[in-house]
Length: 302
Length: 257
Image (cartoon, one colour):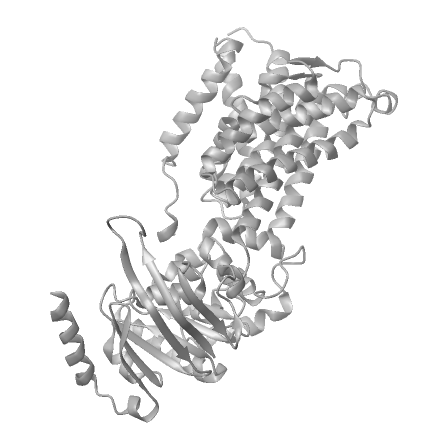
């Protein structure tokens, strides 16, 4: 292959940018899949939900930083609804996610107004007059990587801190052994709803940041979010299983980057960009087979 | 005082498999009584515990604890006053969390689960002391995840955890059944000590007739949703294991076992 060093660097930079942003989403999937043991498909809808809200707010002239708060909140709200459907209406976990995911497709279209909305030339967290003035030109190409890494790091630290609180303990307990939450005189349903809210907040935040980086909202951007999230979580947690020093959240972050690297490699090796979702699926399948993580946890003998 | 009044419970109502487990079942347990319950499979022992805890709904009747009606109280709310140890040692602990985290979790029962630190560092010594009395060496493994402990160790922890905070009732659901004889003995002695020290009102379901005779101050045998033996106080202390076995054989033959 006659690829220049510069081209390789550009690809690597792209991998890191995507990996860090999807890493935030993967942290959300980590909460539902690993901590709650809940296969939450609503993430395929909450990722573009975050995008839609962000794009609309940015067009309306809202501060890009505030749109991040907004996308987290609306994602958390959607997660709460998924949780309520599951807990209060006693709908099976998988179905609750499917219902949310499907409903959100139309809701996202409603919010954005159409299937594609561009925010080029608008102020974002990556491109704004402040950066243009104060950031030296040499840092320019690395700006997206640096900013997305800082946000990812912040979210990871916040999540780590939360998981060490009393409320966080209860969240970990409900995925581990629901019975004990009842024994502690707490409603396990409420705990699940809280977990789904936080998780989807993370996912929608990632969706919002992703659209700020790309400069547009695209309705189908959510397809496969769950797959990417799961792949990242499973790569990360399995690869660093033996490393006790590495926290699971750190492993998930790295899993997201490794996953994006694999996808880039596949494309560099000649796959088309339109094969992306196929690559996503095949990669995920390979990871499942290799890591032997195909079955659901057996809770009664946990 | 725990009162079950005129409880009726049907399984699969309205189907060909309809089965009446309890029909006008009543039971009163005085404060600080330690009731051992024995009975054949399907006699309603575990269902009775589930009814007390609210894990299964009842069709008719009334349940009160110290004259407070809890018949319609959801399960998790009832657990404020109740500690429960299950047959399966995995039910009472969180496997992926450390011993210390499990202890901290149990210690917070009845208090808000808010955004304060999950483990209060100043209480670590107290947790260590609580574990030390188990004589299992768990106090030196505070950072080990509970999933790597043996069933006996987990059950011992489950017992400590469920009795750590002030409770009025202790419910033991065949809590030694999944353990080897030696560990079972240890857990039973431990149970007796905890019940005495904390002056707990206790209901223990067991398949071990010897435990039922040796421990507790009231003995009940259940059969097909009815109490067929109920002996308390000095009468209970005079009960010999042979008396129980005789009756037990009688009901077993009746069922064709």
